[in-house]
Image (cartoon, rainbow, N blue to C red):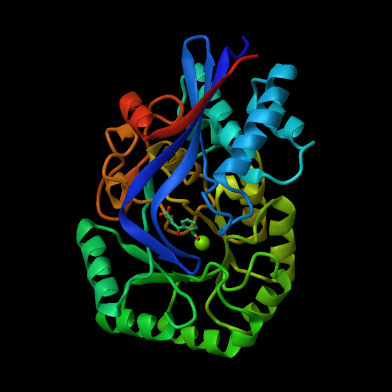
Length: 369
Ligand code: OSB
Ligand code: MG
């Protein structure tokens, strides 16, 4: 069989509540949906590049350009249908992991739908439910943050991740710990600190955090290893892990003790699984990070999080935590406190709602072989 056509849609969806990190505050999400049509089936992929190059160097516009002008032509020219073949072929292009991953995910969904199997089965998953956590942004005040946390706990979430930055860290952890001494709590700095602040960061060791995510910018594997040697709290790397080789360097250097896996950041599922397996052989547990995906991208993440070395609660929350109207029906929800059931239908196993996709679309393109 050969691919009939590939469609790209650029969408914008408003958040239920603004999301603030050390990069700033955002009120909505812009992202690309990739659809591959073959013989009556449709494979869905979501590209997690954001509007601005803050979290990574890619943007929705650079990803659109790379997918449309390089990756899709490569797939058509070489008549690629298998995601593993695509992974090999796409290596001729450097970087642009989020663009590459979006298309690979669509090929995976298509492959699983052709086989009539859920993605988790294709990828070697071992779980029917995955531990769900919630990532809580920076608020205007500590009482407002505590109220948000209270609300998420009442909905059944059992692990909370807060965003920290200089000036919003020690006092915030202190306040949360006073109210919730036993809560599973972790903090994510999105690279907002530098090694000069190591002594300040060490103060966080008193709060029994599960981990501290990405204190320094992406390229600082060496400084992370110096900080990890000074701290008892495990460091977890997110932005720094952009490939199998960067994961290997991080573990060999001792830059972290936990790895956050995001398919988009590492360039696809093939690379994500290589990292997963390597971390497992190294005795380092991983968990699935999120990029505030729509239900389509989050469904892919649910399947990924069923692999055996996903040992910590994931940044995977219900649709209602992110969007008023998610792009899928039924929406993703907690199946019981702390857990989300992984869809068991073929492929991603969730049903896209076409008129919601069209309503949120700001630009589209149909690409033919
Ligand atoms: O650092 O994990 C991050 C969202 C966008 C960009 C970076 C990050 C995040 C999150 C959200 O923390 C996690 C989620 O999707 O629930
Ligand atoms: Mg992070």
